Amino acid sequence: ASAGIDTTTTVILYGDNNNWFAAWAFWQMKYYGHADVKLMNGGRAKWDAEGKPLTTDAVSHAAKSYTAKAANEDIRAYRDQVLSKVNAGSISLVDVRAPAEYSGELLAPENLPQEGAQRGGHIPSAANVPWGQAVAEDGTFKSADDLQVLYGGKGIDGGKETIAYCRIGERSSHTWFVLTQLLGYSNVRNYDGSWTEWGSIVGAPIEK
Image: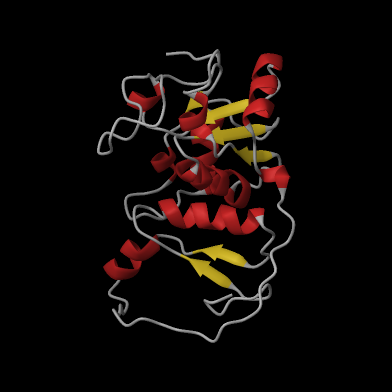
């Protein structure tokens, strides 16, 4: 509301690092029911590379009233849901972290403190498709055909419920965006508790 946004505003999100956190903001806005929100393909890096204008001026807008809708639980997964579905073998799981995190060698991206979870590894049956593989060198998303090959090659084809996870839910938001907004898969959830939660649960099944 303080940013001049109401429920009818078109919101365009962008950021650095291939829109990593912009995609998380997109998922958050969809979770709370904002209808018209978009992600700028290529983010700030592509904008800058094309010589488009940048400014350091702070922008202000008149405040508006904003009432969020009830949370859309169809796009979010919780620990107990994941555990029951893993045990039943009824979902496709995609771990979008780096291979070293997936294998348990690291608990977090290599440039970050190795903390947040008690154990390393991945959730049983999860395929490893690092989130950054969905973008080209210029930061734009790969074509739908290329994305279908990328995910389909790991068994992620939209044929059954899919749950994406990472360490704290932000990288998996990017993959959630790709699967739902670019490939049109309808039954996809983001497990935002992700490895920080799963890797600290006593007795949770873990593979390395």
